[in-house]
Image (cartoon, rainbow, N blue to C red; front, top):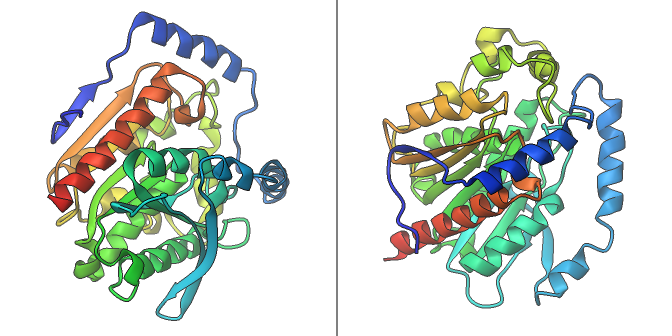
Length: 329
């Protein structure tokens, strides 16, 4: 079992062969159009293609003797759909998963590969939130959906998960929603105390743009660096920048008192890297945080076929197991 350090910023162990693999893959990424949020038509098209690609996805789970349950859950009169994947045996804990997609694309099913690996390796049940998308509602509406799911999961009335430790996991926009949800839970300390850890991949934590976002050149991989600040404004209509900086909308400026330990990752070439590094600095004042900056890695790197991505995902699963064991023990 890996020995995890607390309150650290650690270089990621990587050899020349792994670095060469990442750099060669980056050359291919450079030919791919950057992800842009400039209108509400393109996300609809991408979302339709995503759903088409997911047809028959249940077969992948069945090969592992698993299946997904989709249900609508609620708390306080609000409701939101979730996708639940349970292990074959008794669950040791629960992962509350927030998918990425720039707030405008994606769904709970898109994380099935990652979630399946967590179910099998960590013995957890994964609850993935199928929140609304920002093509039809401002980002604040998505935050309401995620808080609704969290309140349902963490409440004692949810008997299935009442005695289990909960790990919050989020990627990109999902990491933003994960952090924002935890900040909103501070109004219900008893619920927040049930969260035993947070695993966050390259999130967006300042919706006015951190320095690395504002300085992003046109050559940025995966994301449209120069257009990101304007995209944040498009997704939060009617707000001024000082209003966008208010937590939990911009989690970076929140109060992390009583927060659980966290594990964070960011890519060296990601324009969002300052978001993770600055969030880690603030969170670390209240709870143990381990943060890693991945060399030569762009945004979204855990989706790419590289040894670095595989090692990061495996490390994250080990960290989840360690957090759950610490809670139980």
